[in-house]
Length: 305
Image 1 (tube, rainbow, N blue to C red):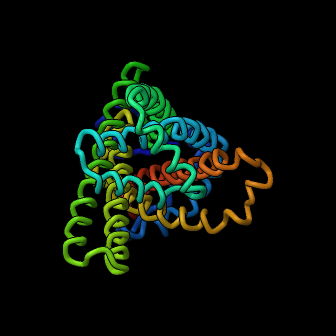
Image 2: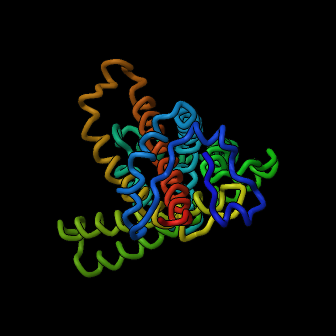
Image 3: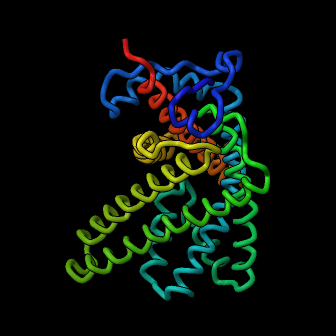
């Protein structure tokens, strides 16, 4: 897709050739406020998500996300318990895990707590995170470069360095969200005790901070990962939309699980399939948000008639 914006030109990268542009949907020219981007670019974004290349990227991201998910949780549990010595932060991580897992929450949490209690797993978790995080961001960079019209990808070493930096940044945002949630849980416990009202408010606080962290992570990926200059104001609305859509899509996915009936087809392997399918859907949403931001920015830069 050829996305000719001023920031693309400033990055020293020519737009994709016209022959390649035919492979991607054409963004709709924008004449309204930026918050209407979803309505304006819905059809082109949907067409983009239906391309086989995007599905290839999403499956690659999903596979590496599954590889990194469990080591990341083990690492968070270890840090909250043994570095910060905070039982509240530990419980926040478990609460987030119970909220985000689409199924079999108790089984997964039980086994992750056992893993986190071990000493050797900590080093292994860090190693697995390094390996799998680079695998997530490698296909993502290629996809985002194409969306924005940047011809040249980073070198393999450059992508590894960028991936490690992004993994650290995303992990830091997650830890800040956990810390803020834990602090608010502590204050709510002092005011309301441990009744029903406390549990309702605690869940609400956890959701607010988790959504903010999700938006921040999406923004960081959209802004930093492409190999060219991307204006922050162009990707912030798409990051916010993707973060909110992520929450809504997870609710729909959980509601649809009884009809999907993975247990009947995959038996004891249904947990892995459930997580893999959700990671694939999340990858599609991430790529859809990237296309939305680039298409809207291009449409706004186009001459208005």
